[in-house]
Image (cartoon, rainbow over all chains, first blue to last red; front, side):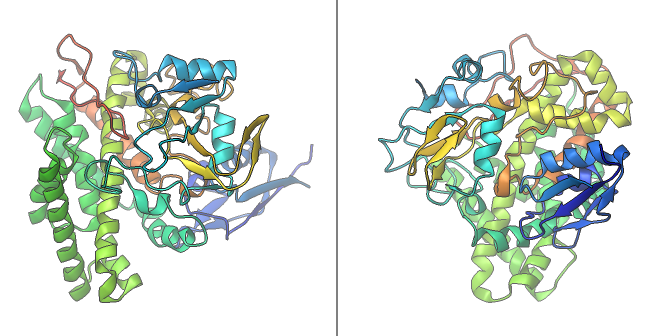
Length: 68
Length: 402
């Protein structure tokens, strides 16, 4: 298991629901239009669960996670 | 294959307002394909039997799949009244597909970001406290729905739209009439027209003198006189979408907690329990039990079940939320467990626009209610009466004592 996950977001697909922000506010934010903003694209094992939760909840399936 | 009636699709057994009709749950657990009988809800489609999806995985797959169109399925209606009084329904966005959907969604979505909604917290707290004062004044035996569950979301929408304080009593009265299924249809239509006229007036006022509220921002973004009716209709749709749904979840959520005293105490006393509790209550209540139909625009294989191009699909959100594949002990209320990704707000690009506002309202209203009335209990012996034949499900009244 890798130490770090890489997180990517597809801003065009984002519908601004904000569930990622609720789930992992240290990783995801919204701009004034509600579109996702990635605060960091690398997350350690301690945040893996929260980020994967955000992936599952995103209604637009706009978040992707990859192990390094 | 089993055919279910509209009543079986949307109804809940008497005394069990958190359970779908048994035929729906049996279908889900047996993996049996269900279809909905032809329904007047879909005009001109009297020969159609929409597929009914009940599994969490299937529901999410369909709602996120661009091959399923809201536009092509057309408007659910109970007659010649597409998005109106007879069946209030937030039609506009839901019945629009990309690419037209995207800018509409973005324009409104700006007003419902986590940050923007959080900014409404002080107003929500204030509105909740005033409603609790009103309930307290009404005295033990009062109807929680009339004094608390219905007014809170309506007043929050007033705050969001920027309805002046002086106008709120009338605003609530009109919207109450519009929602009241026991009123004659022409009375309700008149109330809806009065609401539209009022909102048009507000749009004009904010155009002349912008304030720091949603209407002012939408006016500034849209511009142009010709847009005013569309703008006012959109604002009224926000009310339609966000009033009953939230009100019913407050009412049903209160009942659910009263039925689970240990859980109630956690919600009342532990701030860290509120977030998971709100999600668990949303999951259990699922006030929009099933979605408006979507039309397949291509053949789609749903794990062995074929949906052909041109066929309609309805997603049973309540059944999906109770799918054993989603979580253990789905019928149980457990406000301590991490919330699974429930589909109460739907899924995909049309997922509820106001969901963060709903979460805020529930997270403020329910703990505040329980703290104000530590001895809260049901008054009366009969199970609370529930709505019938509406798109949203809820309690029509909930007499409580303390």
